[in-house]
Length: 281
Image (cartoon, rainbow, N blue to C red):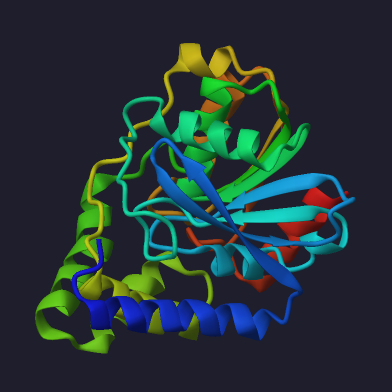
C-alpha cells in the first residue's frame, strides 16, 4: 500500500513521533489473523476491563489513543492498527461489502483472550465495530461510535467538491493549501498533525476510494449489544441529524444518541473529552 520505501519511512516516523508525544506506558502486540499480521498498541493495567479502540480511515493507532487519552486509567486499552491503512499492520485490503472486517476483529479478540469487551471507534472505525457485532457479538459488552460510517451517508456532491477535488488538487500540485482546505471541511478545529500526516499519506499511500455502504435494517435489528452513538451536527460525510433518526429506527439496542453541536466530521478536543467521559462513566 505504501508507494515507496521512503514514503513508508516518513509516514511511520510521524506515527512514532505521535506515539512518543502521548507519553504513555505501552507495549506492541502482534496478532496473527487469517487476513494478515495486525499491530496493536496496548496500554493501561492488564487487570482493568478491556476496551478496543479503532481509528478512522487513513489513520493509525496513536491517533485513536490521542483521541481518548485517559481511557487507560480505567481500561486495558487495545488500540488496533487497521489493515491496509498507513500504519504498522499488514496491507491486506478487506471488503466493506462482506463480513471480512467482523471476522478479522473477532479473530483479534480470540487471540487477545479477552471477554466482555467494550469497543469505541470513530468514522470508519464505527463501520468495523458494527461489522464485528454483525459477525459475532457474543464477547462484546458495549460499543461507542463517534461519527460512524455505515449508518447513513451524506450528499455525494458535497463530498466531491469539498473533499475529493481539493485532495486531488493537492496530489497534482503538492500545494499544502489544498490539504488545509480539505481538512477545514472535515475537522472542527485545525489539527497540525493531521495536516502533516495526511499530506504524506495522500502522496505516498494507496488510499481506498470505495463508496461506503450502510448497514441493512434487518441486520441492525438483530444486534443486541448496547450502542451509544455520537453524531456530528455539521458532518458532511455522515450527517448527524440524519444519523440519529435512522439509528433510532434500526437499532433496538440503541442505548443513547447524542448530537454534537457545531461538530464537523472530526471532533475537537473538548468534544472528544465529552465522549471519553461518557465511555468512562
